[in-house]
Figure 1 (cartoon, chains in turn blue, orange):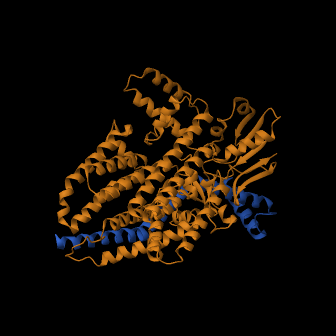
Figure 2 (cartoon, helix red, strand yellow):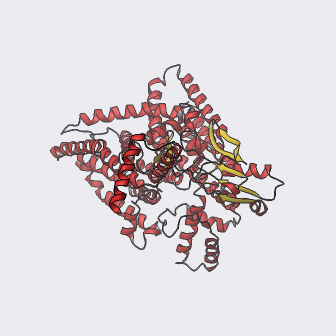
Figure 3 (cartoon, each protein chain N blue to C red):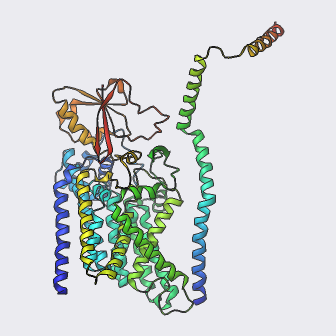
Length: 87
Length: 544
């Protein structure tokens, strides 16, 4: 019984330390991963994405032109090429 | 001389409890309608109706059925689903409401607030009894004053029908736990089992009381095998606790095991909460959530005493732990029964505190669900006062120390009066006004009563006032307490801001306001006034 006593105290202390360390290391990481996964599908994130798209569209509308001269010429040639092939 | 000193202490204890009772009776009508008041009333009648179905009180049954049918509120959660709430306060309150014929909403809500306060009063008395058994009369008096003068707990004692009731029964359970440590007889064990059963019903944390009581018995058995003589009492305690938990909780009657396992599922809603200036999902609270809330909402004196008390208790505990020997004539972790109780409460507190933080339990409304931790905070603080008392009692300067404590307690009382009736939203001096407003405040929607009082006075001659609500608060529950003509004058338009004359907000939002515009105030409205207490913006009103 006397030997068992010390063993029990050591086991209890070790179990508590293990639990705390587990929670502070692996527990935190698991929480973070779970939080990120949940955040992706959350309503708040959908709102964020919607708002971002709205903002980007507003910025795009305000621009004088979407492409520079070189890109515009390149895309024009590319579209013409496709058009000619389809005809 | 000693008799004189004790009779003086007794007089002050008596005076404290009389003043507390008078204060409660004079002020219980001042508090607004809490967000949970209606649900607890529904819970009371739902279970009263169920219990009456086993009896032949036909007239009473009819009244209860009529009362149940009168509940109509689309914001109320379904009672058939959320039926695991305790009946210990709600059912007697519902029955008393019928007996005393409290038929108007103002009448029955205020009556329940008074009952709630009387339970808290009982809790204070049990707390005093614990201190009186453990310390001397003088320390018990100071400790009881510290317990009463905990602003958030005192404020909530009028409308928090779960956490304060739990606090009361927890105090009673710990009192009989200490009595059982002193004398392990069947009477003490019976009361401990009864109060533990009620605590389990009120909050799942209540399970800790019987578990830690049995664990401490096993620890004492490790040190002294002759304690095996009490094993029959421990078995009696275990069976009685299980039996009483079942008997006193009708929720368990039909499917005991599956219903009991269901309560481990956290039913706190998943929402966003304002914490330290940003909206966070309450499913993933930062580790700092609970410590920070306690740190900013507990009076500085309580914090100071708690930190020193915890330091001395922990130091003694570790000394005992590292000096455990195979053979010893004393117990391993404690020397006497008083010390055993100190360690018992310290470990209970650390376990609860640690589990809540490490397991990242979902919480809302500050630390409301854990207000019972205040019991441990104050007890550990009182432990430190006892150390001061023992060390300095014989010194001449001791009377200055008493004067110092008295002054601080008077100051806390003054602050509580200043906050009245919003003591439940108290913040201490450690933080600035700007910082206070970075946290959720009037979650219980107490301020709605003040708002309606003011608006009805300002718009006395108006036939119809349209009010929008830019917060997660069911305003209609507060409106119910007003007279019919006043109720008909107000039209609540929820978030249809364009229809409204006024917009009310208590700044509580279940969504992240930085990305969700649900509660954004339209530009056509301008701020009418802010209602502030001690720099805390309780609610704001906007007018077109």
